[in-house]
Length: 281
Length: 262
Image (tube, rainbow over all chains, first blue to last red; front, side, top):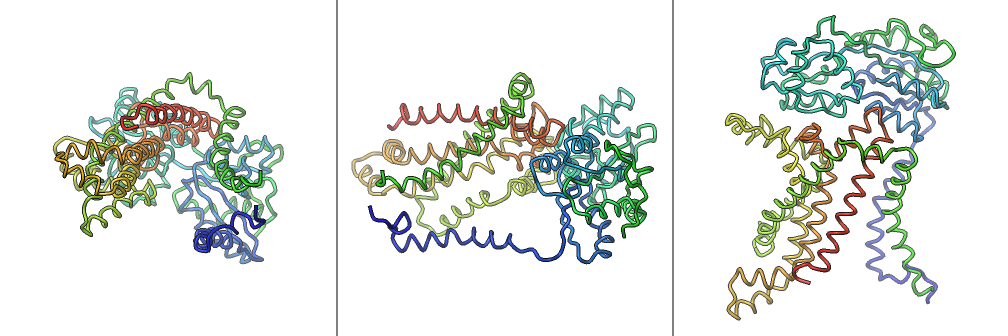
């Protein structure tokens, strides 16, 4: 057999077409190369923070011109899995306390604290005629909720259990979909396919077509966001952590409808976490 | 030995597809609990719904798509070419976008959906919506394959059949269909498999309710976002892949051994 291998024996035309086929791959690889001397901090955060977090951290970026923040938003469980599978992340903001504890216990994280509190509300279409919680029990109303095992669904189920049993049953009977995350739940109302949905108050900023109907205080179930510093993160990531717990960031969160964390509770780490240590700026 | 050295690259390419599937299996065996998922009624509910809807979508693709592909391939008009190209477009759309596109037509406020809703018929969040989503996303695979099959047949065969006095229908059945059979069967397998794996359009257009609209891919993505996490998702995924493999093996056997035109 001739020593010139597979490519050598191909006709010139096919060699050229092969080059054309490989071109996008080469471009893609070189495009990924990039980078520079600026330090980057990778922030993974729960879907419900997609709009607010870049706004809050803009203040940090102004104070640290050499730092580039990159974001990835998805369901908390998805992100926790990616981190455990080796995804490069410095800061993780989770909607689920179990994940914070698990990441700490398994050595994937070094610090964790309660960041902010969020609130469950009813998102209703303005044209749906729904103006109160009781209206959700009317026959024919279409309601979207989160799947029972995902964070927004768990919160919804726990809230439903606090209601009058007849209302709970009527609302459950009107549920048309149990979605994998809160963005999908909210999209049902935005697209007009559902009349109402149970979502976090802060998600409504992204949905002008929907109005928020607050739940009575008797139905309040606390829902916290936790900020976690991941193992191997740089000292810059630690200053992002401190900034998020500091007064400026907490004010920005409050402006977006979040409830500031009353006290930055220690999650599972043996040492006390900096609740007021915002001197890093 | 050296004579077959060129096989190394194709073999590596084949492994590129097979090894990740093996990895999934290994991952499920080590982290997941496939047994628990197999015992869970919810898995079978989702699997039954998936198989039922994908098969129904395939049936619609064959019944409606075969005449369309034949008509487009037989036409010499330039609009037929354009139409064939347009029908490939759903293949490009990210499935979530396909779901939104379907809502603009069949949704509660859609072009057809709104008059239908006034008549008391609502498609979104129903099992019918699952079939429609799968048909929209997977149907083009059947159409494309059938079109290529029909376009690739030599019209002289049909011409000879006509000169021998066979009717159009008999010619189609006895001459054209045997020629294009492999294309139709291949397209059908692609369409069914794609429908079985459909996620994004189904989620957007049909929602996700166990027993009604929650197909296997939706059950997998819900498990992934829940506390079951990766382990739960992978366990369900392995059941879906295993079941699909079984059915595809049976299907290949059927089309090779007792296919009507072999």
